[in-house]
Image (tube, rainbow, N blue to C red; front, side):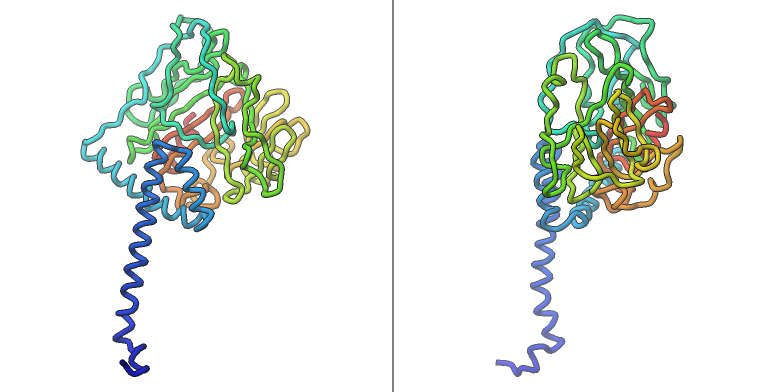
Length: 361
């Protein structure tokens, strides 16, 4: 038995702290390993990965989870850079450049029911895109944007090829790819250009998010009439949880979340036209708006990259501590005439790299 004054003696303080520190270190290591495992599962089971990430945010908060993501993403990026710089891996084009052709009309398989169909952030890798199965035939009046100046030296970079077709067999979307990051040859951005004279953009609210706790929600379904063969061309989901981002969203007259002035907004009008701009400036409340969706600031404005792209803000760009953290990213853009919609998506992208690809197109 020790005198009371010895129990808190400085010599004994370290002895009592060490087991606690070890337990804390082990707990943190377990969380990091578990989170790393979750990220791996995201590649094979996206729904499971999203559910686990959501629960972690509920318990620890979005900033804590973003910190874990930062650690893991940096480790992944360091490994990828080593593999390419050491010659273990070589950068490859995600597909071969296609000839300027149009297929004969074909009946495609209907797309499966989608949980959401929102402008935003599905992150398909370029290699997952499939070429049309119909036999192509040359046509003299093919719609085609001008080729893009390549960033790297991969064959076919910046060269447009046919990608999506309507029921008459006419091309309604072209695709190409860009390699915008000289330090990361594996960071390839798939670019899809969609002819808005031949295709319409729609937006469906998710059945759970985005919405206020007691606010109206959507059903998360693409309408049956749109899920018909040769009618539905593509779907991409990018819903966000209201707890993590209060970006405005409206579809079919239902305002799930109110708009925020200054945020980048995709507006879809009743006549089928599409606009992209800042809410309260280029886009304002209008009875002719059939739907709108907000997400972060504008990346490109008046033909130039906006300064916020380089501001390293977790608030502006969501989910990462710094814009230099590379992760899967996506974006939407319009040409100056507002008739060509561009969709961008790719892995291992920083915000500046994505912005460079968007500006190039």
